[in-house]
Length: 283
Image (tube, rainbow, N blue to C red; front, top):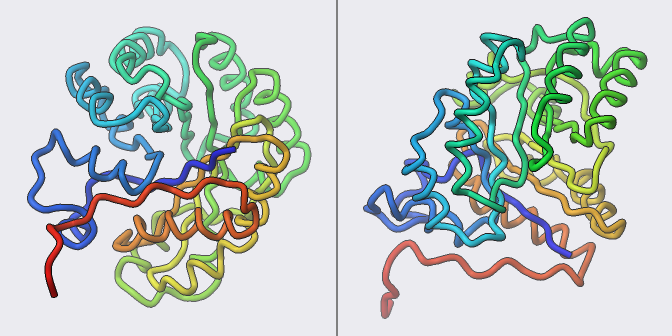
């Protein structure tokens, strides 16, 4: 029984010197992050396929049990909308090959305009994918959350391909007006859809966005702690990513989420103690 938790990135300026050692060379930043969390969102791959040497460095800095949920490039999902993407997909899969078992799932994040009428394109795309990977799909079109027929159609397509539906829970963010610049920015950019908490596979993935106030973030994830505890008892292997608008405390919050689930499922092993940000002092 193991719960994987993580953040949207492994390097973030507010963490440096406070939570992670500083300065750190690029080849050690992920290693330091991985002492705090055992998973990370691979958001950088959305903007460009990384060099294979870069991915080899990621693998060298993490244990085989560390989980990357790696986002497909936007050229595949947003620009070409899953059509005529074989060459881009081959290049991407070749680049991330050094991660080996660390590639927990390939993450297909679809644009907000990708609606029920586009599900056929998604079905065709999923059928062409190699079977050696897990796949997870995130949709943002509101119809998939508000229309039962659209929801059922998407679930059938994902279920037929053995793919997971990734919820991005922003309900806590939009529950009350923003109170910081980061929250105001998030209000203009993040999807506003209902919470969804049904798993389709044995490896559910959750993205949870709280608030810059830690107390409100923790209170907002209580339903997720109960859901994830239930998944663990069912024998599922969940991965949960904790976001806040400024992500300043996301590292500590991800570990706190793990602790909250462990309070419900005591047999869950604790996370190892993280590497300290600086050398120990006498005072």
